[in-house]
Amino acid sequence: MTVASAEAMVSADTIRTGALDSLKDSMHTPHIAQRGLKFNIPLDLRTPSYSDNSHSAQANIPEMWSVEFWRRVMQMAKDRGVDVYWFTWNTFLHSEEGKHGLSRAKPDENLARYFRASVRETVKTYPLLAGMGITAGEYMGEGLEPESPRQLVMQKQWFSFMLWGRLSYDPTLPDDLFKRTLAARFPEVPAANLRRHAEAAKRTVAELRPKQGTNKELRLTLGDVEAFACLGFYYAAKIEGACELALFDANSKPEHQAAALKHLETALGHWRDYAAAYTKQYKQPLLYNRVGVVDIPKLAEKAAADIEIARKWKPGSIGKAPARKVGGSKFGP
Image (tube, rainbow, N blue to C red):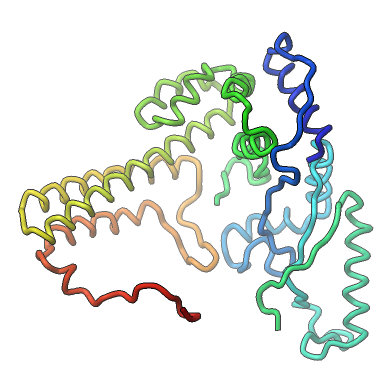
């Protein structure tokens, strides 16, 4: 993002959030001169994931292979003073392998001409592309919101991108700027409450629900806040349970085992709450690349299994476990 565009966005935000009276003449220098975000999206046969059999790939292939989609993304970026660069990981051929004598196993001038032509057509197809790069990639040698499958990441995670972009430009920006931005984005609820509820979400998010009205983005935002809050409570309870179980393992005091069981039972309840909040907005189960099928509600069985592990635990079991190698890695010291 250029300095001029960053200054323009600050001015626009000041006007949009009703703080025009606070705007004064000033000079700014970016705290980080070159600021950017990297999206890992392979644009080849595997698009948009590493395996075409995943649900995300099947749902997004029509979009990710759409020339107009990427032209629209680049136009949105240009309108905001953002440059778009594409970095290729390697020189895959995929469906072109073997055609017209092309082969990665036998690189020749014909293969070089093919890739030069591919680059030329890419630049001609996307005139707003700021540049291209090459990285030493591999083989060298979810969440889809069901109501809006075309929803852009920039639209769903706008506040996160704003925080990274603005604070990397000027880390001294006051919290009040972001509170005013939330107020302008979601006028249905008090911005201070929304920010406070994001920090103590599950306990208080219900207070905001009646005020969401027909604002779909606010509804989905509150749903995500609620789900992450449940997940946070789950991990907090599970870690407490693990600590109590470790104490029981060390000193054999039954009160520590009892405490572990209590925390793990609480964790199971939080996981079920998380599954309920998650499935209100996202499809389950889903097939993910490299991971396989993920079924968040069914994973409650794993949380329940933790309780049985704690119930059957024998003191001293940790000491009997084989020692782990300290330091180094499989690649050497």
